[in-house]
Amino acid sequence: MTWLNKVLQGHWKWCVNIFRMDAATLQNISFDFEIQCRLKVLKIMSVSEKVAIFLYALTWDASNREVQERFQHSGETISRYFNEVLTIVCSLVVNVIKLEDPEFRNTPQKIEMDARYMPHFKVKLMNLYIINAKYKLFGYFFQSFNNWCFLFFM
Image (cartoon, rainbow, N blue to C red; front, side):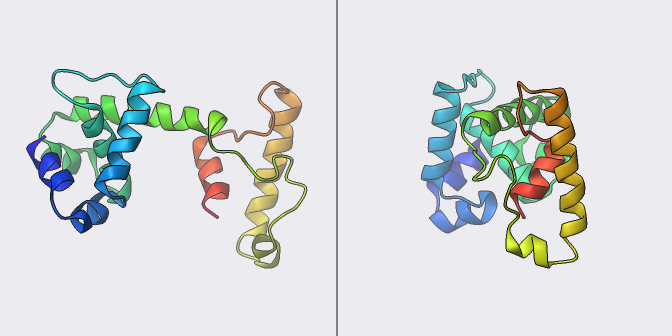
């Protein structure tokens, strides 16, 4: 926790370089996760540290062992709290992150005109229609988090 405190209270560029966001944004996200998503504060770890572990692992493509070294927690603890924050982020897909065109009637021109993207996009779009046919309740969601990331970050 002392390293994280140094980062959060240090120069703003340090926090941006490590977590890809400034300290105020990281603390606001942590506060929102704590209040709205019921992410719990524990004796051994604050909500800010849980979110920081998640962000550090994603932004640096860090292994569990690297995150253990940086945050000084066991591998089991890192995995547990990474998965806890990941579950919350995935739940935000339903509530916060909305698609502009949930029925995918219009394919962005960048995807349509680029031969690298369009073959993959057609497969993903077919998967969406199959899922929708099976599960009307869920609408046009993706069959896995990776498929969703592929389209969201395109």
